[in-house]
Image (cartoon, rainbow, N blue to C red; front, side, top):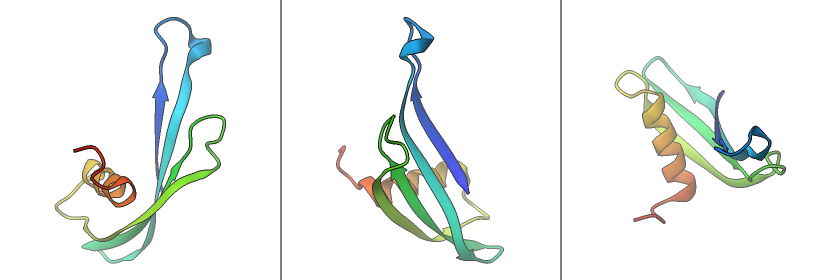
Length: 84
């Protein structure tokens, strides 16, 4: 599983730091070349255990693409093109 945590780091005080969300990307199936992943995006703290959105990435090219590509496709699958 890949876990990406988005955290706000306060310039004023560490007490003001806050988790804005967590992305969990889990390998469901595949082979040496391609894989299918399930994606879960959480809500912000203190509700990071709650799911905000779910999605899937199918046929991911593990040979020619990396972790940032997978994160991009995971976000696109869950959030879509809402920020044009």
